[in-house]
Length: 64
Image 1 (cartoon, helix red, strand yellow):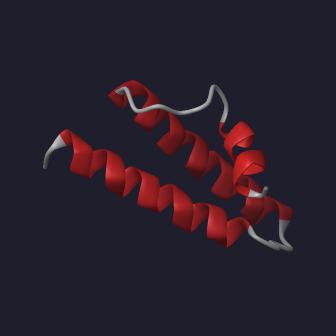
Image 2: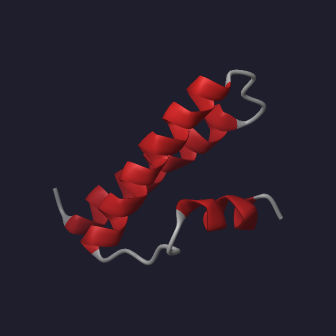
Image 3: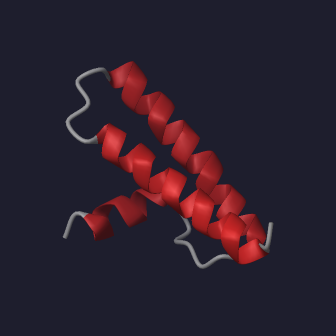
């Protein structure tokens, strides 16, 4: 798998996680989803993909 493909798959996984967090009524589940997203965020960071310092910053940008 090429690096670009790997980055695209991780970004797609993050989008699915963010979609699962919308209107989540269970705080424990929401926290697990946030933790999973953070791990994927740091994977992108380590691959050199352009990401914000913290994933929460990206949540605010996508809600605008």
